[in-house]
Length: 450
Image 1 (tube, one colour):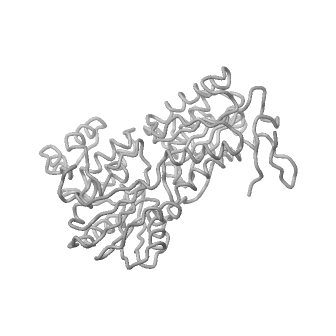
Image 2 (cartoon, one colour):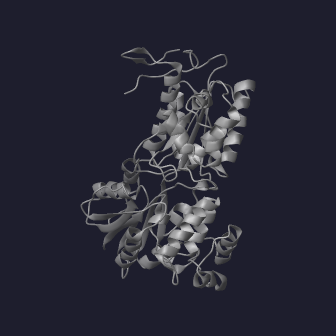
C-alpha cells in the first residue's frame, strides 16, 4: 500500500482519507461541468433566429458553453443566482436571488416571456436549465404578487415538503413554469438542455419544468398546500380549486416541437466519484441517486448501514466507500443556519457516536447547502470528541437546525465557491479496513495531489 507523499513527508491516514473524499466530490462536480457537456448536444443551425434562454445555478455557465461552441448568430437572456454569473458576448446574463426570489428574478422572467413572443417555425429556442431555476423565475399567476411568492416559497422551504411537492405548488402558482415558457415559444422549435438536480431526473421538477409538460394537476397542488398548511391569497387558491391555474399537459400542440436532453445527472456524478475511488484502489458502491426524506432520518439510516459494514463486513466488505445522492429535506424548528447536507452529517455523527473507521463527506454539488455559501462538511470518528472540546453540543445544534455552525467551529466545513453546475446532493461514506485507526497508514492507497 502507498500513501501520498508531501514535502513534509507521509500523509496521515486522516489526511489521506480526507483527500479521497474530497477527490470524489470534485470528480462528481467536474463530470457535470457545462463546458464538458454542452458541446455534445449542439443542434443543427436553423433557418431562422437562435434564442438562448434559461435559468438555474448552472445556466450562465451553460450559456457561455453554448455561445463558445455555436457557429452562427444567436441572442438570449439567462438568469442565474447572485455570484454565479459568467459574462457572455451575445447572451445577457441576469443575477437574481435564490432560494427566495426577488425583483430581479421577476423582471427577468417577464422579459424572457416577451423575448420568445412572436417566433416562427424557422426559429430555434435553446433552453439551458438547471436546478435553482424555480426561485429564479418567479412570475406569479394572476392575483399574486412577488411578496406572495416569497412568503409561500419560504413556507415551503421550512415545511419539510419534498422537492417534488414544492415544485408541484410552484408550477401551479406560476405564469412561466410547468410548460408555460415552452408554450409561449410556439411555433418555434424548442431544444431543452437540462442539468438534473432532482431525484429520478423528473423533467417537470428540474427548475419546476418551465419548458416541459406537467403531469401534476391543480388538485395535486391544492392537496400539498393543505397538507403543509400553506396559506395562499384567496384568488390564487380559487384558481387551484376551479382549475384555471392548470398547466400545459402532454399532448398539448404547443409543446409538439419540444426536444429534451439531460446533459448531466446525479447518477453520472456518482459514477464519476466511483471511478475516482477505483483509481485509488477503493471499492465503491452506489446505493441510489434519488434518496429523499428528512435529512436527520436519512442520517440515522446511513449510520446503521455504515456500522454494519464496519462491524460485520456486510453488506459490503471494508475498505469501501458507499455513495448516494438525492435531495433530503429539513423541517425547520430552530433558528440556526440550516443546510440539509450538514444536518444529515450531524444526525449521522450522533448515531455513530464515534464509530471508528467511518468517515463521511456530504455536500451540495452547486456549492451552497441551504442558505450558506458552504457546500457541506466532513464527519470523522473524532468529530463528537472534538466538539466537546469546543463546548459544542451536537444534539443542541441538531435541534436548532444549526449544523453549519457546528462544523464551522471544528474547521470541518467544505467550501468550494460557485461550482457552476448542480447535480444535487452528494454523500460519500468511507469505511476503513478492519484494524485501522486514524493514526495508522493502512487500508487506502492515494496518488499525489496535482
